[in-house]
Length: 180
Image (tube, rainbow, N blue to C red):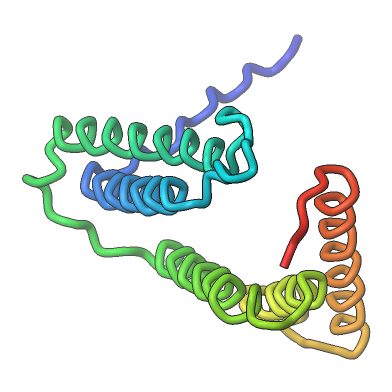
């Protein structure tokens, strides 16, 4: 005779206020990306087919982000997002928020500081990937993983270099896209 299995517990539903905050973020990101894709060079002087213009895919993806952000905002508003108080974050939520802020700062540093300012793409990307690995290693909840030994640094450096060189080669050789 087999033992009865425990029913799976459903994940806790996020508060509507939290969904509303995320919706505003996704809609803002979608709008910013849409504006950037519209402002991209259309390459008309080179008689490029309008279906292959550089801003087409980012524009379509940004429209999807904007639309889904608005759908999420309406859904959270209907669930009473503006009527409920924001719950106090627990330690796990604070840790997750800290990681999101760090990831965003690393991405902005990569996009604003490293890429397009004289460094070759592969070097800028190597620095970014290596730094990201090391920073998140230091943020680990496990004290043993927070230690940055020479071996850990070497592994992060190898991963960073390999990831950036492979990315560079795929874009340059397969997609024929020249990177900065």
